[in-house]
Length: 296
Length: 296
Image (cartoon, rainbow over all chains, first blue to last red; front, side):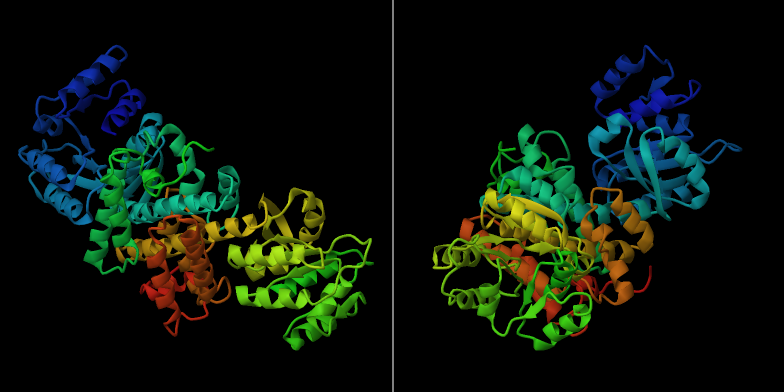
């Protein structure tokens, strides 16, 4: 996700802006410079993490798991302090992680010698949205920071939703993705049921999409359609499982009752454990159910 | 449901058409005549079920459970036969029942002395759609019958979807409502989770409705909205449970794997068992989860 996001940030930023990039995967940063170096010299590859903070006013992170966010931010805190008189450094974390870790990392940034500001801004839209610059950012931030955030994020996304104070961006993302994790399974089940009952898959899809079963999973990411590309690309089943687990964890922490969560988690774990489903788009639940493929 | 459907049928039918009505609830038929008698004399209240078949070319049934459909149609079969030379009698059953019963009843009508034709045409849209004449009919029928069916059903609904041969209307309805039964629970869970995590309910609803969690339950029948009318009206929780059970039964008969069905059934059974939820709109799952009411 980070690569196409950084690409859009560089392409749409002002010519004077300097982009300092870092990735543990050196091939990624090399490829980035190769791809964009001809059109802009304003790219610096940082030698180490601390250098990103040293040389930047705004630091954007996009990391897979809570432990990566913790590790990266503890490196950031090694930087002594912001130069006096300059605008406070702003940290925008786009990772989808648990709210507790995000709040704790944000607090450490604000209270350290860095005297930084921190917002959570997880995204939806996947790698396709990242490449097209059409991501949705769900932002948890103090209102005063919004103008500064908006102008930056709008280079990488088409929609920025302010959900509330720090942590609220993640709360929105996890709530939405909890719902998605279930509608995805239910859509696969309903399509499979109807087809097994003898319905034409296109008739069934069209019927659901003008009826009360209509959802993003039936309209945009219908498993009978994704089966046509063998469930390749899209949002991986392991990422869906990860987000679902984070939602279940958030529900436990806050005492919100989830009736379907554990059963859905079992499903994604089972799906991921099957060789012909592993690593595919999360709608591959349809294949796991034994759904007919290649009919539409 | 039958009352507003018959009302639209009478109001929108040609002035020459005769409507023969029957209901075990005599108050309903008396009220119907009182309400419509002044504008049209073309209403007959049948003294017994057989009279409806005797006096009609097309017979429309709308009944709660499979056993009611069986009982009513065995009364119909007492009628000796259709008068020679007349168009075959057409039976349109709008009940949501199991496919096996529907096919069996249809077969008995076609093979009996009545020499009738039979289609399944379950509806979606609820009592509100029935009153407004905006129901969706999901039709299982031989194609040759469609013109005759369309002109009739379009008086009671705004959309008639031909799903396939006999039984296909019910297959479509049960598949759609299976999906709905799950998205309804998941929406209630996601709204409750997000609000418990501190989100404003309107912000959360708007966020989901432009994101991948978007579904009919979040957009049209959001539990935070229905809580405002104390979950009154709408589609009753017992009806949702009934449709879900029919879908599970159909899945068992056809070997379609449902991963979430039993868990969802447990939820609706538990919800129905709680006094402050019983008899309410099925989105009352939100109340059962302990969702905050009266915030939006």
